[in-house]
Length: 494
Image (tube, rainbow, N blue to C red):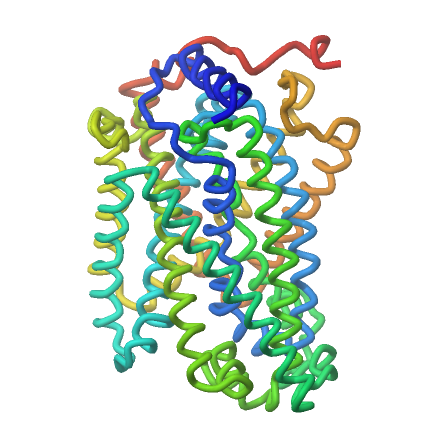
């Protein structure tokens, strides 16, 4: 580690102390590992693999171009999020930002929504890993019961690895990201080469509406074209997971903001190239649309069954790495709220193992939530909860944009830290407009009613616990621990 990085790490630890926290988590994550954590959460190959069929069903192949719109919008959001990450390097990300720059009561709801987004995200990823990648890879027949058992097993393995070592988490996610990048690049080049030499590609697919050509509501609000944004909106999220592990980064004020923005840009560019290659490679649009797993079907038809199995193996590893990142980020969210006495069973959830320097009970909680959801919820209800998880990040990002617009003049600029300078206001306004549009895209389709109600239910449940704290433990929501070192006067910023 260079002298400059040692100084930056020491400064981050000093900030923790001034905020009222003794540094308990081990700083083992370097710049690439922090980037890998954000990129692994996004997991562009996994997101496209899981949602490409939705695009074909709702908008046809031409719907892939909406990826560009979402990528630009999410990059705007990432730029604003990076502004916070460059100033406040504490576990809990948006929970800490809102608590310290607005007030703890507002911050608590940021934390509550983030907890449920991440907790349900772990289940969604691991269940998809079991049913869509691992079972086809090893030749198991599709069975919901088998998929649920495998999901529980995957959750247990991930929890054990996360508890053992943050360094292990960083190494595994770096390996998974490297493998995912290699597979996607090889597939893009492989598909391109095969199509060039065999003439099997069709660029007309890029403007085809496929099976939706006769859809009268195609351009309507909540119609097929709008619904196709689901691929980008469910994939290009979670980039702020790097901020949730800021207390374990060696140089958080530089590495975390760069990871947040860089992961979205890299995923956006790589994802677009992958989508173009896949779409041009479609030989039979109706057949691929009806296949149930269009990406695997395209790979098999162009490159053969061996390439398909390699793809499934790579997707399985990428999903496992992404699941580890989500579980780790969620456990740090619980830890951050628990050490402020703002989470159920906070005395237990805030404990850090002195040997591994990881929040053991907070990690076990995420495992328990996943197991309960697997055991207690029937298939339809579980699916609605998972779909509801796509709405939560849009709500959280929208709240972060509002927070930034409200407090930006009071943010102290850290020397050498990430800053948008004169562009901060127009970028923040554009990001806010985008988030509102994204929420419209997510809640207007006809099948979004129940997931929206699920999200409202989670908010109401949080309101009940919030009311309990206000009645029996109000003082924990009155002030923040430590000193207010982040909110400078407007004059100091100008």
